[in-house]
Image (tube, rainbow over all chains, first blue to last red; front, side, top):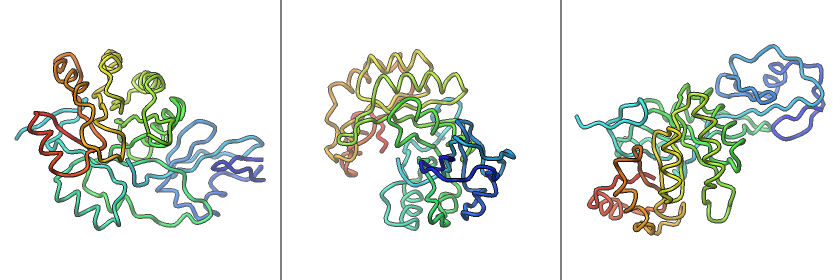
Length: 64
Length: 205
């Protein structure tokens, strides 16, 4: 399983970018934490998802 | 023009606004313009993956400097993670550090705040920590090299006005040995703001 925003999903073998695009994420507006490494959504590494990967997709929101 | 500095950043307005609790983006934009605020704080939150709709916050905040915060962090580790993500999202190196484990009174955790500040400073961040009105902690943070200290005037969202005045007086007395400081929270309405100015203090919330 891959942990995506806190939920386990069977995404092994697919690329991170492909998965996020399929979910309709606007990559230029988000940042992605992949196993504790932060990337701009528009500069994702070519990463094939593996068992145990932890992915967090975040954006700026109102608050504070 | 009278200016002040936060780390390396030179600012004209002494008012830093939050971006939360506005009815809509239109009201938020009007408030920012009316206040003349140059800097607005924003939070970093998980995208809703079931409906990742276009929010439009960046467009609504065009023309102001963004100050990402670590709202939602309960530990130093979480705060550091959010700060790194905020840097990626805004391109800014400064961060309003908030580490709040307690959901009832929203009080900041002094030990985790100190720990997070140390890590973030090592990573080159300009750190603006939110904290209780504790002069000892303020001096510890100052010794690490935070750009500001930000003692609370009353619990977040209480609208109680300044309830920690005696402790804040100590901050005022020790001004020379502290980094730039401002205080925050719990200030309900403009008359309170004016009273703060009459004491020579600069409020922010």
